[in-house]
Length: 151
Image 1 (cartoon, rainbow, N blue to C red):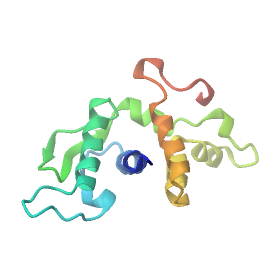
Image 2 (image 1 turned 180 degrees about the horizontal axis):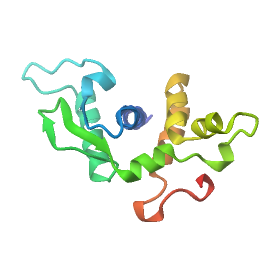
Image 3 (image 1 turned 135 degrees about the horizontal axis):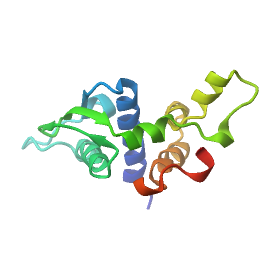
Image 4 (image 1 turned 30 degrees about the vertical axis):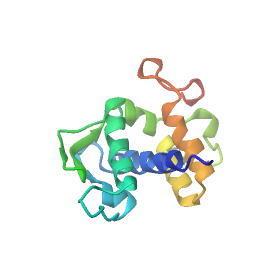
């Protein structure tokens, strides 16, 4: 049995982190529907499982120290959220092994960031590439800092 919910989780993580990276350092409201589209609630108004999973990914990222927020808007969004320093550094620090010396330094630096790798993985449409790239966010604890090969 495939772990499709984990593939969805990695897509959600990429969307959440990139959404916040693109608005950094300005706090923003992050809506589930903007990340995964509309999913109709059931007859009792309970959000669809896919919607609940994305919302739960937002909360999990906050609990794990990747983002902070001031409040939730029902199960629709998290309000006034922003990346933590940890997540900003994670997404914006270029991996040395990915620097392309044939490009101008500023372009090579930007292309070697985890943020750009996540963008490229999303654009590829490959679940395998997305999983491998998003998984890089979780390879270390905050105390360990960046991976050895990225600085």
